[in-house]
Amino acid sequence: MPGAKFDRGCNDLLEPVCPDCEPSSHEVDGQGSKFRRELRPVAAGTGSGPEGSRLTVDIRRPWGNGAEDGCSGESSYVQSTDNASPSAIIMSKVTIIGATGNVGSYAAHAISINPHVHEILLYGREGRDALLKGITQDFIDSFAARGTDIAVNWTTNLKDSSGSDIVVITAGSPRMPGQDRLDLALGNARIIAPLAQTLGVVAPDAKILVVTNPVDVMTCVALKNSGMKPNQVFGLGTHLDSMRLKSLIASYFNVHVSEVHTRIIGEHGESMVPLWSATTIGGIKISNLPAFSHLPVKEFVNSVKCSGEVIIKNKGSTVYGPGEAIASLVKTVLGDENRILTVSAYIKSEVHDIGDICIGVPARINRHGVFPVTIRIDESEVIAFRESVEKIRVITQQVLSAMQ
Image 1 (spheres, rainbow, N blue to C red):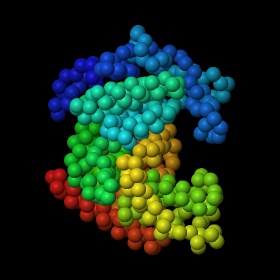
Image 2: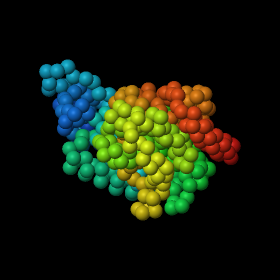
Image 3: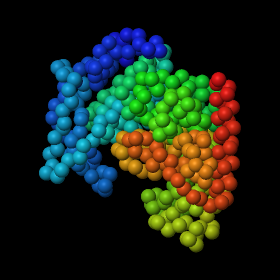
Image 4: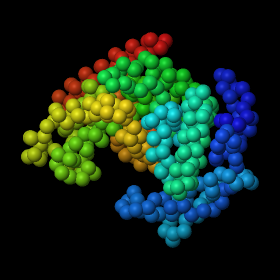
């Protein structure tokens, strides 16, 4: 981290002189400062409903913005002000690789509202110091206006990702108008591979969330090069695609989006497979609703497939959709929520014995990582999924062979 002192360690990676010392909680213009940790009531959330109810809980969170002196390096529990039994929140560090990009920077800001996050590290390549510094200061101003008590740091040294609970990789060449995601495969693989290899050394206990396209192939590249367990490495996959389809269905049936449950599995791309057999509205299987017979299925699927391309054509890049999708996955992991979401993950035989590849599938997600769920789907969906898997398998093998 800028301003920190390091010694050369194994694999020529930089190691901190005092490895048992905590990094400073705040850094601007490369200057680290200490912070004081004291007892402080912190609300877990505001609003109404189970996810927005106001609750004061025991968490590990520093007092202030990190500008105070006298840091002892010790953590204290914040005491609940309620009579109800408080629940513990494990505070976490999130690193964003590619933080100078549109998706990376917005995702970092969306993640900052997560009550489980105490530090966000913005990583960018060397030479991007000024931009990283500017983004960091802008975040600090935003947090001050919003009342968010969270540390934000920047770095061009991936060693500083040590201690991260989640590392989000958005780095890579963006897709241009008219370009297929798969056209980016080899070039982005050469970016992802060394990053993953370093993360496997400096942050071996982290979970890696890959966003870089083509995400299914890049997830496999990251898994192979990091040396981590399959449950530790996953990709954004068809999570956002599933949300896009969900929104279209909700609009068609004129129901709240929360009433719709649907999934798209397979490639995040042309061969994606919507699971109509697993789609429900208000708990009712969609095929049991008379209006389903008039649903423009092909138009909906094509709309989802082309959504990213249309946005790129009109505004240059997709930002808010991917950013919020990333933040929701980070929240699911850090909150240990055990939600089943559709992400790119390594599968063996969970979907009709089709596997040995990283691709979009339903997976149970918690602080231990991602765990694909065994499912059975309609035969037509099995055929389409197998075709999607084989398409990604061929490209993945080509990329890995070229890398070797």
